[in-house]
Image 1 (cartoon, rainbow, N blue to C red):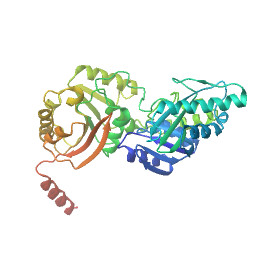
Image 2 (image 1 turned 90 degrees about the vertical axis):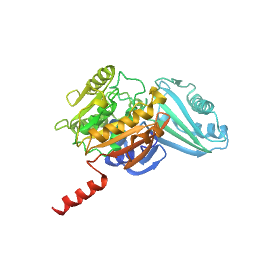
Image 3 (image 1 turned 45 degrees about the horizontal axis):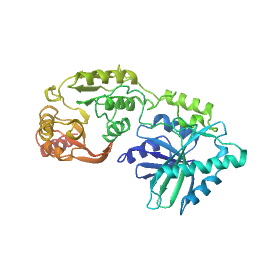
Image 4 (image 1 turned 180 degrees about the horizontal axis):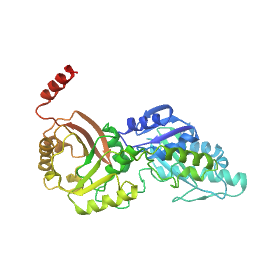
Length: 389
């Protein structure tokens, strides 16, 4: 099968690496997605294990169209009866990026009409549409004059893991949180701290990565489970294999802090739901008064004025930078922020920078390395240590 695995902008490389680790072939990075070839086993395993996938589509047909009639005719020729019967439900979702076709709802309607008309002509009856929970969800993507028809094998968005039943204002998307941890290059052994943990999403995703625990529940109602081609014995075999890959022993120390007592309570509840209550600690503590920590990896998403209305965001970021320099020597801090101007007030030069989208907000994910003394002194010390080896 040809699979189209969608992700958030900026996480294409991380998703690509995840897929290669699962054994994907002929994978190609494109904007907000990775396209690859894979069999049914890979499809099932990808749904369970991928942490940076939003949705997985199974490619069906692609054709050039000049108008809506071309689309109707091409869709009607597809043997839909091979995929679902009269007693099944379906729905159509359209995404348009074309100067010719501008109304996604109309394209979805024409696609639906073509499918219904095919069934009426062949069987004298038609399947029903269920926009909320269909047995088969069909995706139509039009770019310029190229129409791509795919089957949505995921159902609801894969960022919804199920553990986050409570959340603070402006919560971090689970897929983005996992992407941050993977982008950081964390070795899954050293301590990891989120000093402004909010709902605890980064903490839960980090623990899942360290434990090699699947991102999704085995019981999740994936779209492919309703297909005629669903292979229950293969699915059960994949679930058993994935379960055996979980390693909850020798977990690293994963810690979260937040000044807001409600956020601490919410984080603890979400961590319990995720099954990591014995591996993650969360305490109420103000970042600016936290005890000194050395040799620590910090990953965090500070609040900023566009979403949480910080009174003086520039001063706030200056204080974040001052605290990093004074209390986290020999540590690495990765900070995600959508307030690009405020990041300049940290007083630190990033050693790496990645552009991401946090919701609809253009953001940067920056790496800051804190040393005792200057970076030059650190370099000279490293050279000196190497010469003694």
